[in-house]
Figure (spheres, rainbow, N blue to C red):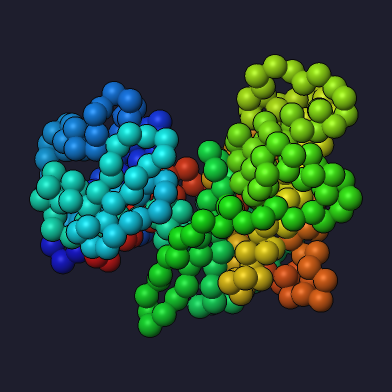
Amino acid sequence: MGGAEGSLLVADIGGTNARFSLAREGEGGIEVESPAIYLTADYPGLEAALDRFLAEAGRPPLAGVAACAAGPVEGRGGEARIAMTNCPWDVTAKTLARVTGVEAPRLMNDFAALALSLPGLRPFELASVGPAREAVPGEPVGLLGAGTGLGVASLVFAGGREIALPGEGGHVDLAAGNDREAAVIAHLRMRYGHVSAERVLSGPGLVTLYMALAAMAGREPKPELTPAEIAALARRGTCDIASETVQLFCAWLGAVAGDLALTIGARGGIYIGGGIVPGWLSGGPGLFAEDIFRARFEAKGRFSGWLARIPVHVIRREDAALLGLARAARDG
C-alpha cells in the first residue's frame, strides 16, 4: 500500500463526470468502494471537486493516489498533466499532490488505467468472444474500447512488473475489408478527409455511420438519433439501416482488434472495454455480433491461424479503471 498504512485514493476524470473513490487491499485482492460521482460542470477545477470528496470522506490517511483522464499525459513525475479536450479542468500531478498531501501521485491516461486492471479482473467480470482460447502467460495484452472515442492501449510484462502503454491507436486509418466498406469510407472521406477508426468506432461514430448509410441509400435519416436509439432500432430489427450500422461496427471493431493483436503480438489476449460493447452485452443477447467480430478479427491472410488462437474478452466490470488506478497507487 505504497509503503504506508491508509487508503488508496483513485479518481477517473471524464468530460462530464468525475469519479472519486477509496480502495484498500483486502484478503481477496483490492476492494474499491462505490465511487462518488460529481458533474465536472459544477466545479471550476479538479482541486475543488477533490477537496469536497476528501472532506465528505472524513479526510482519511492516504497511502497512495492515482488519477486518470482521457487524453495523453504530458510531462513526467511531478510535472505530469493532462489537458482534456472536452472539459476545462487542467488535471495535474501537482494538484493531486497539493490537495492530498501525497508526494508522488500517479497520473495516467484512462486506457492505461483500464489496462492495469486486467490482471486483477476475475472470470465472472469478463465475457468471452467466440470459442474459448488460452492466453499465453507473460505475453503482451491488447486493449481497445469504443465510447466517446476509441481508446487503445497495451499491457506488457517485464521483470515482474506490469507496464501499461497508452497510445492514440483510435486515430489509425480505417481500412476496408470489402467493396461495401470501401464505398462507405469513400463517402466519409468526401466529408471528413481523413477517415480514422474512431470516426466510426465510437458513440458519435455510430451516428456518423448511420447517417452515411442512410445518405448512400437515398433515405432521409431520423433526426437527432442517439447511439442508444440506433442500437435499440437494430435490436428490434425495425430499421435495416440501423441493423447494418451495428453489423459494420462489429466488423470494423474486429478488424481493428486484429490489427492491434498483430502489431503488439498480443498472445496474452485482446480485451474490449469502453461503454458501447459492454452496454450491448448487458442489454441482452444478439446485438453484439460475435461471429462477425471474430471472423474479421481472424481475417488476416497468412496469419489467420495465429489470430484464431488469441482469446478475446469483453470487460463487464463497470469500475475496472478504478481498480487499475488502485493497483497503480498501491505499487507506487
